[in-house]
Amino acid sequence: EESVYISAFVKVVSTSLREVDHEFVRYVAGRANIGRQLNQRFIETITPLVRQAVERSVSEMVVSGLSSRTSIPELESPADVTENNVIDERADIVDAENPNIVTTYNERILFEKICSIIGPAYELQAKDTESYYSILFQGKTNRWLVRYYDKKNRSNIQLPIDINEITGNEIKRAGLEHDNNRIFIEHPEDVLRISGLILDSLQYVQNDENFRKRRP
Image (cartoon, rainbow, N blue to C red; front, side, top):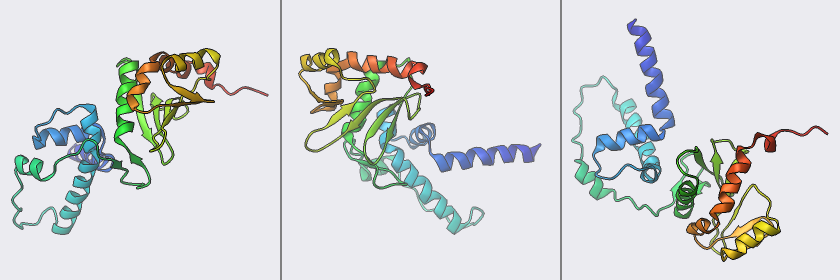
């Protein structure tokens, strides 16, 4: 029976250390007493830091050996850690596995604003790529709600719905411009001015008929 427990525990620990999901990050941050509100935005900000901490801890354990009797170095107090590692919430987050994927502050703000429009009843997930930043419905890559191109000169978003005369007029009334299916925004908060189109996009990605393969 003990071997069964150990096997299950090893599997959970290995998965947690390998994936470093948001629940694990929340647990680590809570135990570290860093004195910050552990909301979703902050958890996403510190996830790369926790991942680095896990990698460093595992490396140190491999070098020293889990069963060694060497003295454990004195750990910094939470206050010292906070003082020495000030977290810049506006800093870019570089993907640990692909340095070409950089999640910007604007992209994180956009996700926050889209979530405020949609509400907590629906599951949205953010997925960054080298080319654009996506907000996915239920984590499905083909059911993207918004694609965001964060450019230094002129940022824009794309929606899964067509921009026709009616939706184009709605964009114009919101004080924004569009070119084909691209809607230009100066700030991520500008999406709040076209919340109706965001909700239309939600209805589109919820409809299974829009994703069925049509027979020739």
